[in-house]
Amino acid sequence: MNNDNIVSFSEASDDGTPPPFGQVVLAIEEWDPELERDHEAFVAAAVLLSTMYVGTDVTKLAAYTGYPKDQVAELARRFRRNKIWLSEGAFRAPWITEEDEWVAKFWMYVNVGTGQFRVVDESEDGELLFEMTPKGIRHAEKLVSAT
Image 1: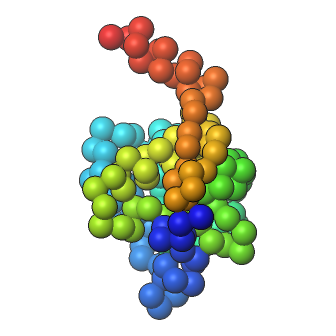
Image 2 (image 1 turned 90 degrees about the vertical axis):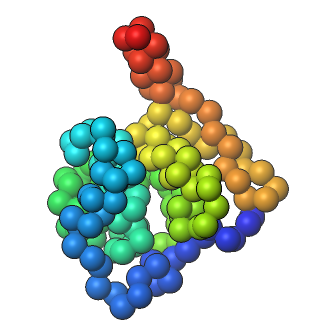
Image 3 (image 1 turned 30 degrees about the vertical axis):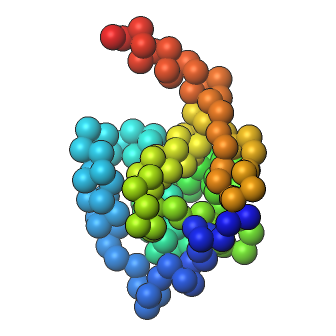
């Protein structure tokens, strides 16, 4: 596994004090200005990005983000099952790289959180390989039929 994009909470937080959650919200709004704050993808993005500041503990994430604990727990279950969140609080964070493809990777991870994609394999260089879930297929069909 390529460990270039694996970080732990202790490495991600400089002094242990997370920034106000509002800064996480502003970052997501900058990355996707069309996404509503109550949309499941926004919530997944906010939880995923918040791991950089409070780690992967569901209780801490719910307290930091203000999202219901059961909603955060469902996201956590998907992130863990799909090897985005790893053991011991480590997690994949390709968005902290200088590479141009970080945006696509971040949003793909968000789509895993929403249940629209799942990880099916990992390449020799540590890249996750994805496939669309039935939920994702239904969502894509709705998008196509709406156009």
